[in-house]
Image 1: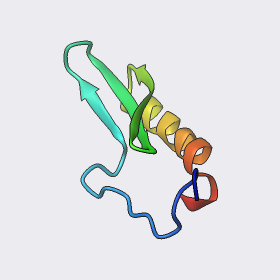
Image 2 (image 1 turned 90 degrees about the vertical axis):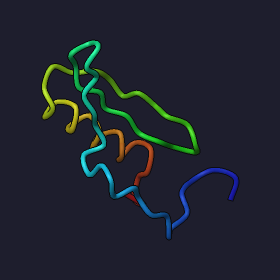
Image 3 (image 1 turned 135 degrees about the vertical axis):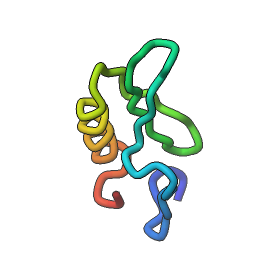
Length: 66
């Protein structure tokens, strides 16, 4: 399989939301790892906006395997 996600792929359990706070900018960052590359999905004023974007990103990048 050249592209795609393995069905038995496991997610990192350290960060259940997939977002973190950027103290320098004072914003929440939604980020996703796909094919060993970090993709910044956006920076947001509230954590809930970042989590919502992260979930949308999971559907886009991981599709039915998320």
